[in-house]
Image 1 (cartoon, rainbow, N blue to C red):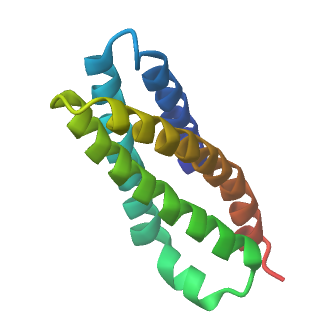
Image 2: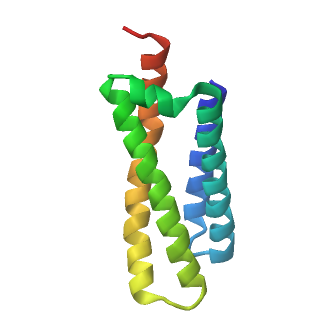
Image 3: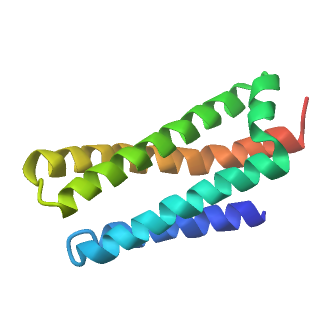
Length: 129
């Protein structure tokens, strides 16, 4: 339950960060970077407390594999967005901005899917068959 609350807070913070992307780009950068760090800490916490990677390797439940794949894609998108964001803050604009927007939309879809599938994974692990 605590992990779901933290994940919800990160999702809300991502929304706040997106709100400020044009109004206050420096604040957008700080919020989104903080969300990345928080999500990484959350992933590490889940791995260290629950052995998530071992669960993925040994489980045959498709939802766990789907969730793990989405989670990996989310982290990859975060890294790409951080790199593109760095380029934007250092003066490389038009093609970088377009790519940042496209990857950002992909990230949002994946992060929402990650959030939704996490509830199914919790139920699948809590009630094994």
